[in-house]
Length: 423
Image 1 (tube, helix red, strand yellow):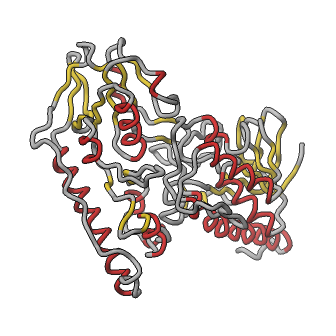
Image 2 (spheres, rainbow, N blue to C red; image 1 turned 180 degrees about the horizontal axis):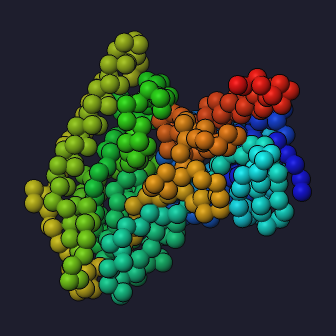
Image 3 (cartoon, one colour; image 1 turned 90 degrees about the horizontal axis):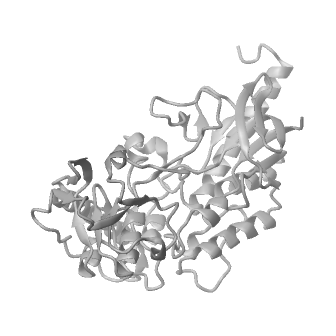
């Protein structure tokens, strides 16, 4: 059985960023990947998807954007080519097409069992990401059998859908993008929306994520946030990475004919039941958006940028029906497909170490797994910083956690040399 200091599980951007940082610190390691490098980007995304972050923001340790369109948004083939190239540039020790069967504690650290053999390691990094399994609500069990159901992982383009109406459930970035694409295919679309975050794609002449970057919002740390559990659940911005840099919000969707309805709450007697809080949700989203834009305005003034960017402006309020429908007949054939754009959860079915809280989440302190020394987490929402789940956030997290990992290994060495040193 091979013995190595660190096993990194997952060869997406987060796992590769950690690999680069470990190599810089002379830590011997292997990166195990169930498919090819950037497997999720290759196999679990729809055809038209582009990154939500501008090209210049794809910054990884020792690597960044080198093209002539820094303000554009990568297609999926361009994205996994970028990550592929990164793995090659840093000479990452990736073992592809290797499925992890289990990870267990041992006296010497951890045993990582795979279908290509086992590894004994002192430390392990879980970098398989947050978007492995679609979160499908329990109400799906009551959907009439004649209605087709699928998730964004299964969806590729409108051609795979039956003719007829489509109900898209969930109104963050994924839901709004798919509602627009499917509606433009000629199918009537209803979008069921709960909590969401509306923002302009471009504000004062700069990408909204440029503002998040320069104003330091993306760098806010997990230990500076009053309610980090809540912060980690915040929906993604309603954004689309279109060449036209368009804003895709509810107003844009209703302008092309998408029907808005409240949060999908249940099914009774073949009728979908929907929350009546859509107006309140939209008003709250507008309020939060304008507070954020106000913070950017203050930052621009304080840092002398008012003359370098356009003047402040605000989007028109979200327009929705005062009394949106509270029910929809799902048995009359009007809706042929439901697309559950209701988020994801990680898959740790192979992790046989008791690290989970009562909701099945890995207990960690900024990526350092609690009560299991030598185990680390990468690529999760607001892991250490608000940008942690972005390609741009992996580098800083990897630097921090690889420093912690080196310190842990050094502590092990001291304890081995001086058994009473830690007592």
